[in-house]
Image 1: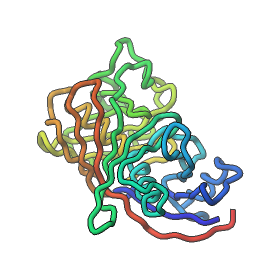
Image 2: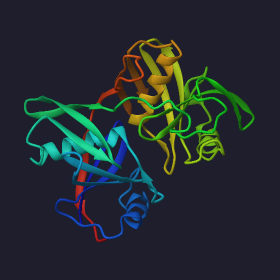
Image 3: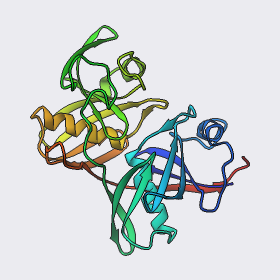
Length: 279
């Protein structure tokens, strides 16, 4: 089976072109291929298929074999892949993932994709839809004690659930390996959660680390950066255009602050290598 390894800000996935390849057992393939010692290695696998509600479909699996609804970094890579392969034939098209359609705009330089902008849709703030268990309709800067430490948590769904915590220290010094799993598997999140630990540098810059459900720490999370900026704007701490600095690079996020408006994410999509593997 042929595959292509790509990354967006270090968030790396194994991309399989299902317009030409067939994966019989997708869950088992995700577990095997994602293993960084015995497989190819990655934050999961992405199956690229022809869409039904959109031009293309992205099917995403975490390294533990669980399905994921959306990944902002992966969808940018899918966008570049289908354009470079000549499948798209245009710089504006759509990609669906678990029934949700996202709209893509490619920016070219000398005919080559330099960055990808994604309309990530409007944020979901209703607690029941995220989902998160709360006495209120929304979870905005709600106090929570996890692992013996007090946090203020804002919960947002960008197609998948996120809990955003702003901390005083640099995320690089934060005990992510301790607190990440405690948030991911906390009983208040019926479907587990992606946990972002962020520091406000100023109104236009946020530093962040992320713990993703089913994966662990990744170098970047596109939906997580969107959720973090939404949380910062809702609390009045950020402007409408913010650069989020991640371990693997940076993403540009824009949101009007109007809850019915889409969040826009712009960032890179890069190739690592291609190859073949017996599966």
